[in-house]
Length: 295
Length: 295
Image (cartoon, rainbow over all chains, first blue to last red; front, top):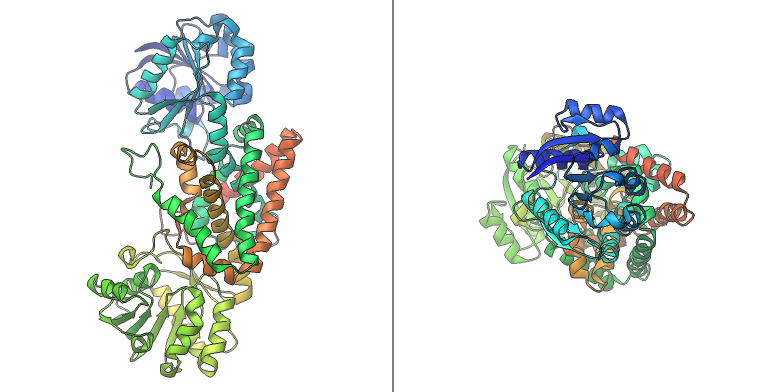
């Protein structure tokens, strides 16, 4: 049980965390700060936070748990702004989709206080942004990957595990590097590809007519293309090398399919599609248990 | 109102059409044939068809409406097998995802009887195949593209429009060529890309661990990769040139995104993602009206 959550970033991810913590009875008070004062005010009006803080530092003052729910590129500057109030008793986490860069930012900013910081990546999100969409169930049944460093205090790591578990998440550990390599493959590349196909269509003449003909398959395939541009700009930049490496592997697989089409090798083409179809048919989302919508 | 539907191909698409026609009171009797006798028997056991036909020809005997719901590559051979019973009073349609090849097959097989054939593409489907998944609502609220030729009888074209409209579809017309060019962009390429990313992941070491980390974005992005391999082998072969042309445009758009990443051009990267995000956010599926799940 925590006394006060210092929420830095009152958007979809941060707002959903605050609502979930309140509903689970894990925190008494939420003090929130967002770069845009109108967002902070809106969060209070919606009851997502209890008190508006005029700065990140003041959101941390008196907090025993702090969540950074901001674009990963803003992590270092934000931590530098709050470091004077960071104590070893405090649990600080983020929700960023990349971890190597976050750990670097923590090293550079918190230094000897970095033991309080537990890098976290909840595998959850929506293609809509903003505190209006904050949902106490956003994290329910999802996976959360913690990427502790050798400096992370075991006491804070344990508390981080307890918090996410209490919110109904399945918690696992990875190194920041293996986390970023894995999510380049299963999350960052799919977003890059979804952005690319939308732009490829938009750049064509009659793109409006093309889009008017698209059906349910296209709807689901491109859903993630509607994601927040600033967040994904930062993710793609932060994890650039891994994403580009995955893109090369993807383009090899695409080239193999195209080769069989060009060579009219029907059996090979069917075999390649069958491999993809079976793999996808047999896959179930890791965090599926207890959820109905994860087929 | 039709007396007898001759259903050739009792799978998901054909079975769903039969159920929808029955429910709408548009047909009295459904005589079905599938290449695999066990499928035909299963369709009868499930009440999707009333009578099992031992051949395509016998499924057409006595029918005033015929639906081909088979892999497009099987169209010509099937039409040759039934042509002796095709009359100008009969309405024959298909549900193929490609149209130029179907029209060629119609020309080659039916010749002077081709006026009875109305090429149709209902923009509906699921990633699961088989009569067990046949759904009377599969076509409800969807678009149906008809691609009549200069030989198509206006009387049959009008009846085709009436049938699909009565099933709750929005009917429009295109030439076979423009249909195939458009669907290469919004349907066939997305499937090719989804197959490619699944195979790219499967070919990596620790692919099981990678897949276990994938979340809701990946789930939706790859859903269509589970589609029927034989059907999609035929689609990609039949519409090869258009699909490869769309793939080149996609790879250009992907290359542009990668270039901005390599050059650390954050503003350009954000602009490109914003273009994709806004286009997708503002898009609504053409056949959305009356449906809740098409966001």
